[in-house]
Length: 192
Image 1: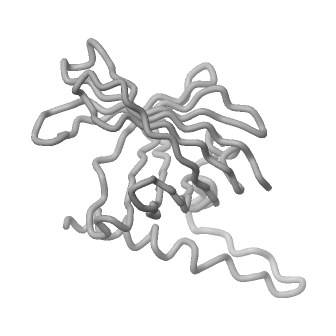
Image 2: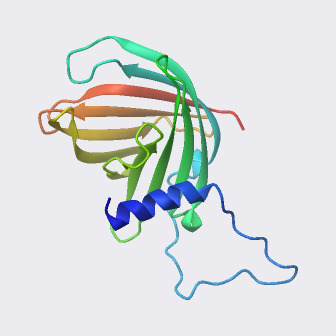
């Protein structure tokens, strides 16, 4: 595991364990030596608790039309003064439930977000990050990866975002991005 991946995994695991200490009565909040860039707020709507309805293709990139449907939850909180966030997910698949962590970080220089995935089925491996941004209310994030030994492009897309709902989709392309197969669709409904 590279040092960057190790640091990201440690950050994700520790994020839920630590919160900022309360300021002493009358004391000013600490000021960083170098002011951080103002976060864009692209994912502020995601903070909080959600019920998630999943619809996932059983087999990917095989012209399958057989979908699995199941429920889950997602609880998201900000990190890095708004330049990142982490969410704790429960996915209640028919074959067995598992937990996962979505970790996002914003780079003010490139004005892009990176999104990593880590779950308890393979707790020492972070997925390749998808990188992208929001434009006209839709967030599109891309990566090159491998699916069952086959090079693919991966696309995450956030859309239909309201204060109480959102849609996330994952798609793969085996032809360099000319065509896409949506293989995972999630509908988020705020619970708190």
